[in-house]
Length: 253
Image (tube, rainbow, N blue to C red; front, side, top):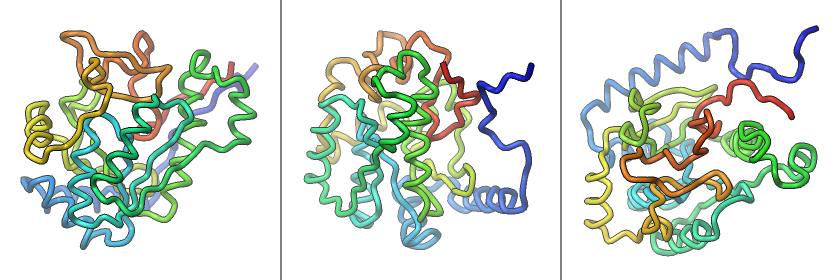
């Protein structure tokens, strides 16, 4: 009997639109090669994707860097925050503080569908039973809806964060969007230097050993010698939440 409990979420075909988008991303990568993060952001915000670009931010431990850079270029650029309903209270407090501190004028808080939660996570414990499906319902689906009006989105991912991000490029594609990773080559020392140079406040959990902060049930502090994302879904065969990469097979249990 065919197993119908799971289905692949990645497309099994290519289209001309996808191929053309990849060509565009590759061309942008060549044009901006070697330029600073600020220069890349200036170009894509004011020229390449003017009015059609947004910053997706978790308001995590390193988020203030891109938020600060974008605020100085155009504080009206959409800043999309996924409120999964599972964030640490400290993250919510930090988000409000940064919005006020940086003068961000277009922060958009996106929530999961109430109907989706009622169907897939009525008790709020799906993260413990099926983390991939939880991320799909609370992150992937709301994000797809939030990005509808955009052509490009800015991410804060870095190669140094984890081995799974070591091959990160400046520009890439996902579905019908171009993504830009202006901090891909930044090191922890670069991050620290920028925070100090611009007197940016730290996430309240950073001092407690949280190098990467996601949803509270699936995040722990990082131990000495671990990479920055080791505290995310610790003990599980899972490294990404489904915003940047497909979750693979979504199994309903």
